[in-house]
Image (cartoon, rainbow, N blue to C red):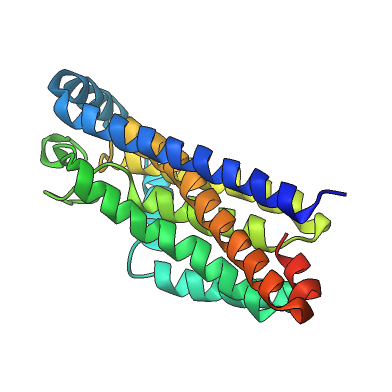
Amino acid sequence: MISETHRSSMLVRVALLATAVLLVVVGAGLVLAAQGGWTAAEMNFLRRVNLAHTPQLDSVAMGINWLFGPAVAPALVVLGCGVVFLVERRALSALQFLVIVTLPWMGNEAVKALVGRPRPDIVSLPHILVLEPGGLSFPSGHTSFAACLLLGMILTIRGRRWRAPLIATAIVVVLATAGSRVYLGVHYPTDVAASIVYSVAAVTLINVVWLLLMTHWARRRPGAARRSRSFR
């Protein structure tokens, strides 16, 4: 059985690795923002993708655009908290979900501001479904939110019967969201790829911090030791 000290040491190493990954994502974003030639190549790719539009794919992409957009996202977080509470029967599990989803989601906007990569030239596309002129592109907010939401579910719903369906759903939904952002021409491929890497690292980091705080709290309150095991 792993001791508390060894477990805490492992969690710290995971946190350091996640932090390093986040720094690499930010660094990659800064490099991409400064590379006009690479951006032009990605813009050409978006134009080729734009020519492959179909009514069916348009409907799917617009549905994803609405579902994981800023107007609906807060309701999905609240709904997710409710689902976690109903499945786990623990208010702290629902709070854990709220924290490990919303903080990385907010951090995505901070990375956008720091990197400062402009959105693709949407108005130059022959088939425009979503007109979002201006704004920042790296990383993708929709993709990041979808990934954070589903990773939060995976980490806080611990029953084995839920694990495989949640992971399968997360893979399909996140990849579909990433593809839809490129399909709509509102993000470059590197934006959505970075969003997935960022989300995994950010959710992992915040979750590790949560677990370390719960462990520290349990040590300071011996009567809470049994409850602390529910956060492992």
